[in-house]
Length: 232
Figure 1: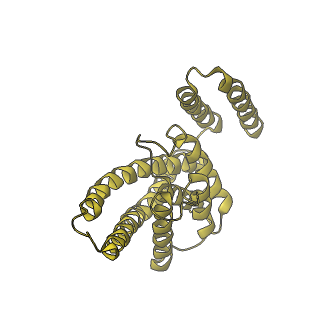
Figure 2: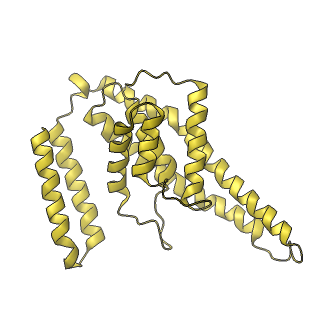
Figure 3: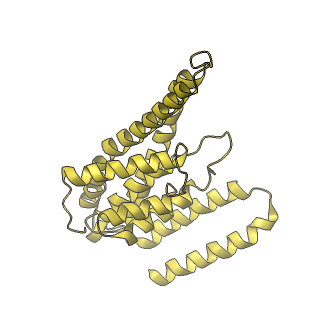
């Protein structure tokens, strides 16, 4: 834990950043800051531990890589999810492997919550701008409705961030506290093996039958396994 107390001011700061990252995903700017590896690092930075935020964001990036952020298919909303995961891990009591695992799982869950909230929001957006007769002959009305849709998306992202930030932080700390053994008592090798197996499954589904992608994937997996073995 970084020793930073969570006050109403810090909660408001996280919520505000969540609004900006939520807007960055689709509605406004699209600077890629909403990708998990960036959003997670920002979450860690807010609480004095960007490295912890980077680790949570990087793992969340791996997990969500099965769902590329383009096309008509649904994919997790990663901005608020990465921000909360990175901040929760930075605020964990022991920075254990277990805390990282729980933070990433929470981020993945929040990403899908965000996706479903976007689907609901788009139904309202269609009502705002879907009927050209409403603003026929008045382009300014279309601009006003567009700005209203942006504010609606920002409010949605802020609601998700503000409502779920503290529960995730407290959940990470609570699971650390009740887990047996020191620092959560989670065997690093076991968690690493499960994580690598999960990433292998993600890679297999992404690559499919494209043989040219498998050699670098195998080399990367082998390098990751070696680093985990050396670190443990």
